[in-house]
Image (cartoon, rainbow, N blue to C red; front, side, top):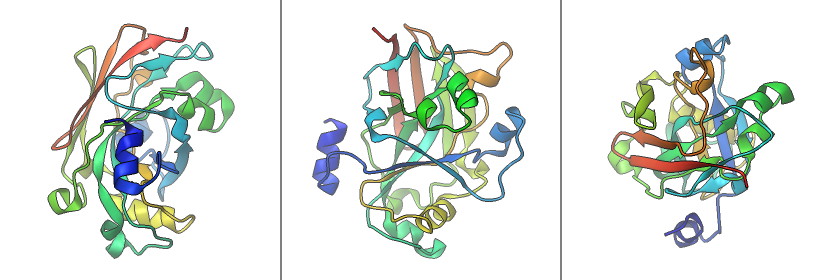
Length: 226
């Protein structure tokens, strides 16, 4: 099943209308980039044309020489809402899945904002599995890992979130309506390649795996733009 087929079946639309992301939602990730932890959820967006499924290739663009993967828990909205109260937030969740927030780091720094760096085609791999709130609750206590060619780069827990899922939903919906099928990427832990010594970028021929406990493993090969 493709992303389009799954979203048509579950939500009656071809793809999520919005991909909302939370930046710096792990204190250690903020620190590794030399930033202060935010006092409220820091939101940005990826374009939906970035979506691909498991096994589809992440394509490295020629515009950037350092592209990273970021392991993330993704929340899928099931019921529309605006200004959703935090204690009602989970009533709006269709389920959880696994996402990879692929990022072009040179552009991310140079542009001064993140849309282009986060939204190249293929820059949002997504696992096509939804696990509901009835099984995972607010998704606390889940291990989040990234492996590049079998080497573990990221390894943390959703207990380390600065802002948990209900808080993020309430905060985002205060600004805009969340609609069925919308995705929320909840942030990535420390260990991304850009901040390693020496920096470690993805290269053609690599294989990246993102795993969230109780949800599964999202695996994608890496190729160069032709």
